[in-house]
Image 1: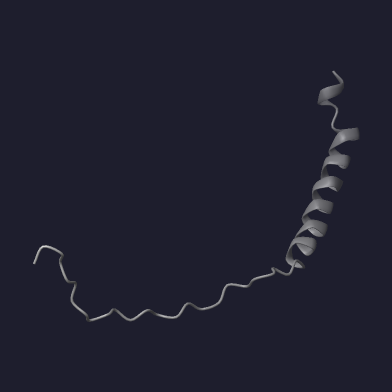
Image 2: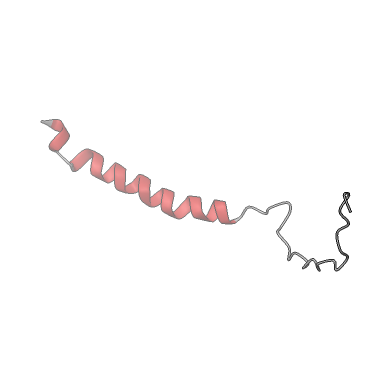
Length: 55
């Protein structure tokens, strides 16, 4: 059975995965995002009371 002979395809499989693990992370990390997330300012709660319409 040719599927059980690991000689031709195991080397191709290992070469493909090592190239993916070496090349792709470098390319993904090199992206510069257009809007970097900044720190959000804390909103202070307003102390004005709510006026109900039925009062």
